[in-house]
Length: 119
Image (tube, rainbow, N blue to C red):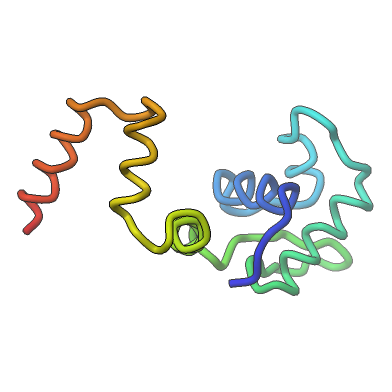
């Protein structure tokens, strides 16, 4: 999967939530720093070129929908982050969050239980 810009990722989150949307629908969902309609249209077309969205044509207007699921994107994003920042080690990643106090001992125990239950 080709890497997305922050704005493209923001638009994808909107499309995942809406499932199908016209550019005006996406624009209505953007809360801060609204781009111009034409700029947003270009961003969505870029997402199409990157293989993230497709569309149904209704005359001159297009209704866009995601063709990459949020789950598939998340997996790719996390794999890239773990590879780039944690030497491809999940242990290093979990250790980082534990040291930064972003995950508690109780949460770690819960994760271990989930892993043991699934195996």
